[in-house]
Length: 502
Image 1 (spheres, rainbow, N blue to C red):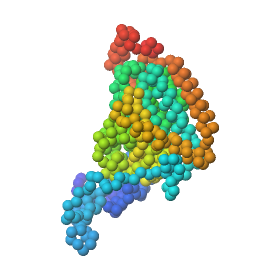
Image 2: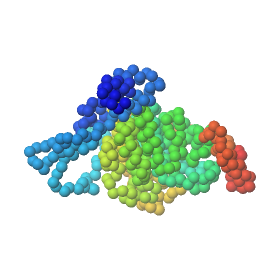
Image 3: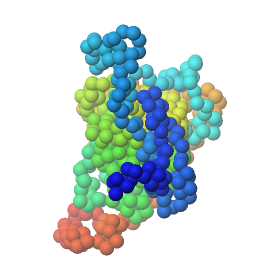
Image 4: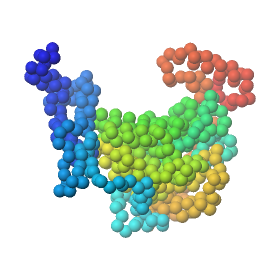
């Protein structure tokens, strides 16, 4: 058979044609000077099968498997750049490399840190010559009012936890601009994978108010997308109306309707998930991208490095947004890494990157707006490092004054507040006033107080909900666990809330 095929080039070409591989890509289609993303022709069989659901998966695999650098061929690899013998290049896989007889190490510390993109100064005044993405009155006012709503929600829920009415909470104080401005630059079709930047001690029973640790700081994205104040309250008070049926800690939100994946308490695991989702969006040719958030602490996890490399190699349309607030709970960045922040790590993996002032809502909006366009149209990942400061405590389980100076916190709170800065800008354009400020703050506070009262009085989810929604037919070990839990509740009724239906 081998002899037959070796002597039958027409047969071989016919098989290639049937498989959709004939002339899929020419040897010159990819070379050392090719761009990150390059168009390539679609063959007749592939074009014919694009409307065929049965062939859809194989077509996609064939299309995107072509976006790879070919191995170098043996032969004349060395080419002189000039007449000097010591200046040669070799075409290694991935690109040409220049040789040099001089021993030179790449510096571990550049003379200057990477610049930080900024549009508004500390007083909220537009910096002359700014590369500004236009923001109209309606958009600007919604951004500002959502930041106020986020502030008010944080204040009331934090107080509720201190009163013992909910088990856990954390705030986004000082980081409101990152929440709202990033959300404003995205579309509802973009998939969001929110952040968790610390550990969580899971308890077997979800209503147990024992000490737990976690951090998720993107509720503003859900707020922007239409998640109601009542839905926020229902989740924090873990009642029957909670979308998660009380299985998650407070502030571990999730919403299929809003393309907002449920928060998980494991650090940085959302990063490779986002890359996989982005690649799926690319395969389905959707006009959307995946967006994932993480903290400076999350960048110290292996999942961060794997996700960036995965995204770059697969050319996935995903935006990585790092909220670098200087602290991973009580661990400063100086104890985490020696590099110039997180932004410089992007280029090491072949990811286009930018550093942005995280307290400048206009700068964040512009950067994410541009990043989204590049990610989708050019099929590439983008890394954004937003420099900010966590003014509030890490969570209700933390006292940040134990590891950082109080005057440092106050300086950031008073002189670098992103909400005040953005308010100064919209007031300078006569889009906002002190009267509108008072009226809106009073209104949103009343709405939240009402939502809290309703959520607190609502019935709790039944114990049986803990064991459902995973298996169509629950296995025997889950039946045993449910039986054991019910027996434990009966033996120790004081250790469990009396309002949880058993």
